[in-house]
Length: 146
Image (cartoon, rainbow, N blue to C red; front, side, top):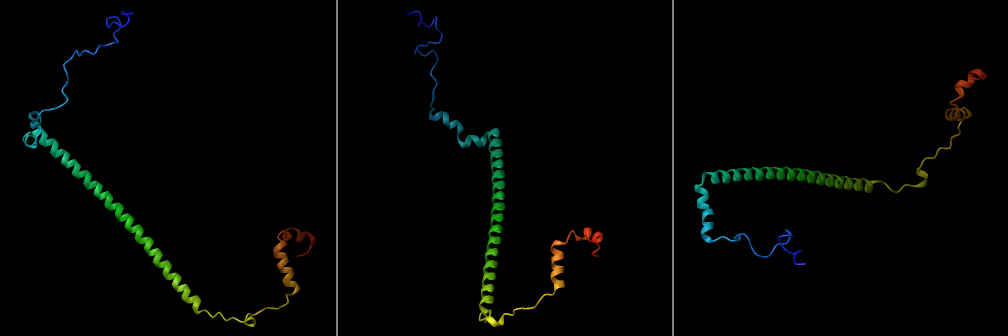
């Protein structure tokens, strides 16, 4: 049974003995001094990297600011249009209210004209022919109406 758990025969089993040197996960203060800003300014490569970063960042902020200004302007124009529509609608409503209030609403029954005229037989036939006589033009010549 011991043979199964032996590391020589089973390479997947490892023991808890460290075979490599431990990796340090912290820095001492003296190591951090290498990366102080005064050293950045003296290093030409770091200076170039920092200038490039600052330039690109300022360009991005400028582009973002321009986009935001365009969006703000677009929203402002849309709001102005909506406000103008509301103002126009209110003006029209007030104007209509004034016109309706000035209308003479005291209309008497006998003031409305009524027409009691008799239609002649020719008018009635003409109206009927216009309604249902659309096919009459093809039949009438053969019958002799025209």
